[in-house]
Amino acid sequence: MSLANKKIIVTGAAGFIGSGIVNKLLSESIEVLGIDNINNYYNPFLKERRIEAIKEIEKKNLWSFYKVNLEDTQKIDKIFKEYKPDIVINLAAQAGVRYSIEKPMDYIESNIVGFLNILEGCRNYKVEHLIYASSSSVYGGNKFTPFKECTSVDHPVSLYAATKKSNEILAHSYSHLFQIPMTGLRFFTVYGPMGRPDMAPMIFADAILRGQSIDVFNNGEMSRDFTYIDDVIDAIYKCCLKTPYPNIHFYETKPDPSTSFAPHRIFNVGSCNPTNLLDFIELLESSLGSKAIKKMKPMQPGDIKATFADIDRLKNWVNFTPKTSLKSGLMKFALWYKEYFHSSYYQEP
Image (cartoon, rainbow, N blue to C red):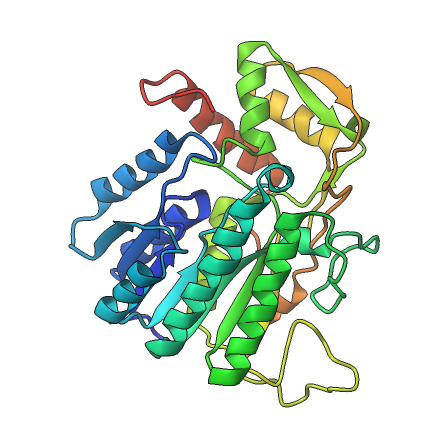
């Protein structure tokens, strides 16, 4: 499939992953409309900087941007009606496992109501393909690794995970009822330059460079499948090139949650290389050239002890292979962060 002459909406366009896929699409001369509410969950300055960076490199008038909440039904409907997208990439969401315990209604409004508005836009305006962000957090209480898409994800341990699981269910129902091809992507701990200030790489880097302590939860007995941003963008872009179709081998008596009789598929997007948290900190220290002051703490509510992505299905679907090692990715991140930390653009996370 070619993306030539396709019109694409990217929600969460000011976000870490969203701005990355926008830049990739624009570099391929594809027309993109971005949507983001630029909320203050974390300092909006970095979101605004990402949008500025897009404007600085975009020279072909293929980019437009709307500052809109997804839960604003009328405005979202108007955008779909006027723009008539061929593909929608929905990356907008209220993120954060721990924050979902404090502000549950924010997650219902953005991740449920907002996502429903996107589904309605796809239904009413004949969108060819919806790609939407899920999360590795849906695996919840699962203990067997690596996590496979065929594994049950019926035991979320945070409200954030529950909303992402809900997105998958809602997407499947719309895909079945209205025959809209949809692809759900379960992202595993994405990191890299221009990353989210609420995630460990930037929290740790900021504290290390300031000589402040970092909180190491579960006494460091945790591991994450850290996935570099460029690999995630590659996965999303490749999924844009292949439209899901019904699985004719689907068995209702032994259902596989990742595939369906509807044109709906779910894939893990990870590095397939889990790293212990203490080893991650050691690599980050080496990349930054400074030592961390570690403060050991117990496990936090809603956290998962380990994540580990089995990516065979995505590999077979679109020939996806992560190319960036954690050592290489952290070096690129550290070079960017040190420059950013000392620049006039820097504002405290």
